[in-house]
Every structure is written in structure tokens, then in C-alpha cells.
Image (cartoon, rainbow over all chains, first blue to last red; front, side, top):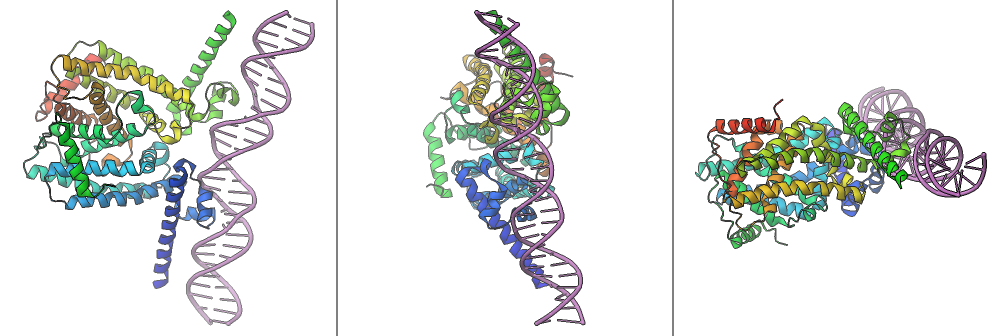
Length: 238
Length: 238
DNA sequence: TGCATATTTTGAACCATATTCAAAAAACGA
DNA sequence: TCGTTTTTTGAATATGGTTCAAAATATGCA
């Protein structure tokens, strides 16, 4: 029946409205300050209505992550389409990821927070599943690139699955982001801030997999050039 | 004056008592359940007394991290003493770290939580500095191993600082732990659980740095053998 | 259209907990 | 022993997430 369809759609629209407003509030004052009552009021709804959509505040935060994942995915899909040597494409993933996170610092922090047990366990099971599902296409793309490398004989998996190799890059990105975003940490250990450190480390990892063509890190301009051409392709230059 | 010295000592003892009890409570029901009032009562003190030691709950959690860091350091110091090729020693750091975290799952989760902006920013500045200071000796040890590798001509830094190279391994460990501890994540992406995946990835990274002797990952038993001998040396076999 | 019923929305009350602070207790010094 | 300073206490406060009975609205039917 048409009526219930319309209701369903309106409900979905309202959910997006809540998420939009939440994003706005977070952009203004950080996700720590986000309050359910304030958010509801900003949308001209009662507090209780929020709970028709989200089982808890943590559930809402996770819903935000889910939505952001769509943007994330879009970026990755662009790279999926790109006809280029596999090594350039896998690195493009890292550059895109890094650039994305740099622009949306709140989002990295949020993602870090959401993966915390305290938050993860307080979201609804459905939402957690949703978030994990969001990772699937991203994984598929990364796996695809690894597979391309294998097919092109640019990479010998040496018995490892495509997932394991993709996972290595993921873990390195993840860890780098966490460390970078912990205030004072890089400074305390005199590690230069900025994406280049991570890029070099990523190339070390890829070199270690034997992923051809190997990158020569003795020549700093080679990396710079690669990053620039990549950003140009991805149109992520300011 | 002697009196104030004794007072200082008693104060320090009480702080340790609080931390001991907190650890106990966390072991029993997880750090999410930790409540200031409950903790105080468990120690037969009033709630307010806790705040003589910790400026906030987050400050207390960070104090726990600081204490744990000492254990962490102890482990690393053992490796520092170990006379062995640099590549074995740097890998020993990873094995020790992994093993430590496996045994103390609550501790990884806590560490992840503490590095979150929400917690980090709510601890006292003094405590944050303390925690960052705890990292210094660990860094020094890791840097030392990297330096040994360079001195022994097992590693060509190619212009990178010892810190940058150490940081790479740190980021990979950190990221792996985070991903491993996010419930359902490995399963969703069919990545096998267990330390071996991380160990292989670490060797890929070290290989990529050109850290001699390179490890051959086509031969799975080689890695197993290495890990076993390492655990034996570190006496971390159950 | 009017009425009975089902659904949705509301927001004040509720609750859990971290934090504070005025009063009580203890320690100190003369 | 007594006045003063320091420490401890725990009830009161503050914050903010969550609930739920009542009100409002929508739906279905004669």
C-alpha cells in the first residue's frame, strides 16, 4: 500500500535530517559536545523522537560513521575505475584515505571513538552489522587491486590471501591515523608530522610484499612526484 | 622535615591502592563498568578522596595506563639486554607486545579508549605528560635496535631517522591491535584471527626496509620456528 | 463526515554517575 | 590542652542520556 511507503520515506528523510544536524553540531563544537536534547531541539523534534531512530547516543554516532562510509566508498570507487598499474592504485587508496582524513579530522576522531569497546558495545546489533557491511565493498575494491597485481605478475602472494595483504595496508593506515591524532604524541617522540612519513612507510610495506614496481626511497623527489600526480588524478588538490 | 616525607609516602601508597583496586574491578567487570563511588567504597574511602589523586575519571584511567607502561617497559628492557641480531630483536619487540596484549585484553581496550579525544582531553595535563614520558624509554630502546641494525650494516636507513623506522613498526602494531579488538571485524572480512597474520605483515614491513636478514615468507615453518625460539627466550610460554 | 482505534510524538520525569564542597574529623604545633 | 591547619567525608549538585504516560495525530470504517 502506498501510504506506508510514503511513511517509510518520510521516516528515512527525518533520519537524514537528524544526521545532517548532528554533523553540523559536531563540526561546530566537536563530537564530545554532542547532546541528544540539543540535537533534537535543533531539528524541532522532541528528544524521544530521536530514540525512534537510534537506540542510544552511541548508535547515533555509529550511524554517522555509516553515512560517512558512503563518501569513503565513493572515493574508492573512483580509484576502482582508474586504469593504472596496481601499485599506483593501491597507493592511491592510501593517499585518498589520508587526504580524506586530513580534511575531516572530526571524522577520524569519531571513527577512533566508535571502534572503542565502550561505544561499539552500546550501539545496536543492527547498526554494527550495517557498519561492517559498509566495509565490504571497500574490501572488495582493495582485494581487487591486490588480485590485479597478482594477475599482472606484479605481486607474488607467497601463499597469503588477497585479504591478508590488503589488511596489512589497512592496519598501517589505521595505526598511523591513531598515532597522528593523539595530541602531543608525535611531538614527544620528534616524529615529523605530515602525510609523507606514512607514505614512505606504506611504500616500505609494499616493497616488502615485493609489489612491483618497487619504489626507491633514497630519491625523495620520486615519491613527491608520485603523490602529486596521484592527487591530480584524484582531483583532491584544493 | 620527616613528617611530610612520610605523608608523601602514604599518599603515594594510597594512590597505588586505588589503582590496584581499579585494576581488580576492571578485571572483574570491564573498564566500562568502573565507577568512582564503587571504587572508593571498595577501598574504604569516600568518593571525594579519589579526587585528591585524580582530577577526573579519565585521569584515573590514564594513571592506570601509566602504571601498565612500567610493565611494558620491563619487557622491553629484557629485550634490550638480549644479545642477538637486530632483526631478531626488533621482531622480539612485536612478539612481546602481541603476547602482552593477548594476555591483557582489557589493557589494549583501555589503551585504545584512553587515546580517544574524549578521554585524552579530559585527563590532567600533568598526567598526559606523564604518559608521554613513559613512552620515551620504550622509544629509546626501539631506536637503539634500529641503530644497531644500521651499525651492523643490516639496515640502510636511506635517509630516514631511526625514529621514523621505529614508528612504522609501532603504527603497524597499533593498527593491528585496534582492528583485532573490534568485535566482529575480522570475521566480517574473513581475516584469520591470531597473531600470525600480524607477524607476517611485520616481516613484510621489515623486509621492505631491507632489514637483513630478510625473512622468507614462502616457508611457513621458518616463521613458526622463529616465534617459538623467541618466546622461549622471552620466557613468555605459558 | 464522524467516530473508534492504532500509531506517533511529546517533553517532563527519571535515572545513573561524575563531581563538588561545606561540615566534620584528624593532624599538627605550641 | 587548645587553637589552627589539613584532610576526609558523603550528601548535595550537576549533567545528560533514557523512558514513558499522556497528548496529538493518523488511520480505517460505517
